[in-house]
Image (cartoon, rainbow, N blue to C red; front, top):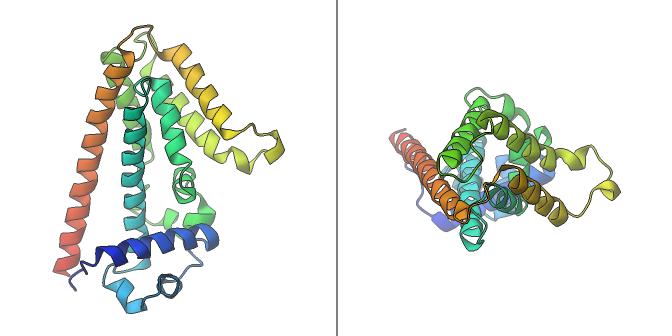
Length: 236
């Protein structure tokens, strides 16, 4: 079956699905629920996606792409956005814009349910996250935007530790004990820059160039995957 080219309807389906998955969870949300909330027929869903799993994977890809663009825009607008602390600060602000995105980063089983146990799922290679972060830190060191006397693998691990700790902290600490999010994010950025950023005037610009290279490469990978998926769908 050929995929529908109704882009407006496709985005509405994804918007509604994100809300329902966050509220009820992937396992408890049916294609019929999504169709009803989007104000369309169940058949119209299948003009875009062959299954609920395919819909979720497209949603995950869209959210990651939008997140990358949002993060890149925030970094470009921030004079210190190219330092490690500046990048991390803007990443956390961008992440905080979407409840569904936060659930993605936490691999929240209440939201993503049985999909997390599917073979070859969107999150199938978590070790790649550490490898990507390591590659990023090494490139920042080579550009002179991160201290070169630090072990890149340790820095990458600490970055992951801070990210996943922040998005999960609300699950283990009483709300009244958690400082305002803006204060926490700004504090993390300050600590990272004091510990890891060389005292040179061009650190931020050098870091921005590294970031642009990495984001461009990742977006190219996503687009290639989307194109391949669309071709497979049209050939079915």
